[in-house]
Length: 313
Ligand code: FAQ
Image 1: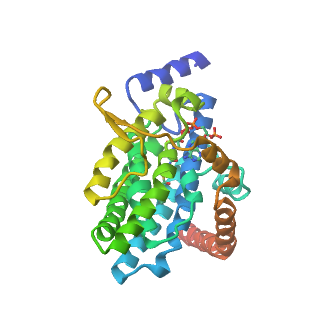
Image 2: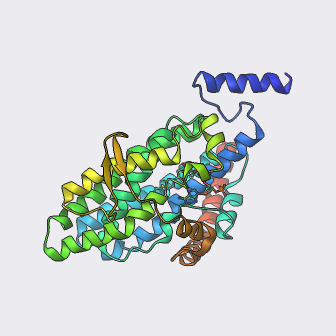
């Protein structure tokens, strides 16, 4: 088949909302776009384990500890599904991890902020996982089969994570004055960084055009950010807390809130590696990888032995 025939099949599948699968022909730029997005997403999941892992030993009750442990473990699992999905595009996990560990690859800006108090664990679950779901629900219908299928399972787990965070916030917001202050302080610090998770404004988002054209993203950064604000303001009100935005105002005409944009200079600084915790996160990630070397080696030896037993049988 000539290349334009392959292209017709590819375009035809997109037009009919059919999935593109690993063995299908795909344009080189589509493949590269997916490797970029899926691997950044995978990196975000495993780096995202660090700010919360930081609180496992200090969770205020046995129940809170068990729930947080399960959540952090889930994030590790999400990383595995996503690296596996990326590998179907012809890249190795070693290459991807090497890019992360040497600082070449991006991961979500949000994980470069510190978790200073227990209320931050509530805010991360509620806001960060809430924003993640807002973005990932559309990715369940992404055009690339392995990514889309990974997202279905991830979204189910993220919903539990969001509820875990909101439960912590509810306890604090309806608790003592000090607890309510802690909850407000966490909301103040996480509100704008969470809004940055959706990416730069559409007018400054170089990847959006192709992503929407190829049905990798079904909605734009600004559309998702708006939906997040509209949904979350009601939750803030229920908690009796205040959104840290003096300009937040309901706009009847657009049926949504007008709000202050996050500081995009701060965002650029963070994604260039200069946020408050970038260096700490990469150092922790590299240390974990180095210390896990013997586990990976043992798993490989075991797998080899097992396949020899099967072959001999
Ligand atoms: N942080 O042209 P666009 C989670 C980069 S959820 C860092 O708009 P695109 C769950 C972007 O890569 C978090 N970099 O890009 C969890 C591009 O740079 P490049 C992860 C960002 O791809 C919760 C440049 O800026 N979720 O981990 C960010 O169309 C709690 C221009 O941007 C996903 O990855 C950012 N926030 O849209 C885990 C979802 N925003 O590559 C633990 C999948 C933009 O050209 C605990 N990804 N950049 O050098 C996506 O939906 C998209 O990739 C966006 C960015 C929306 C993130």
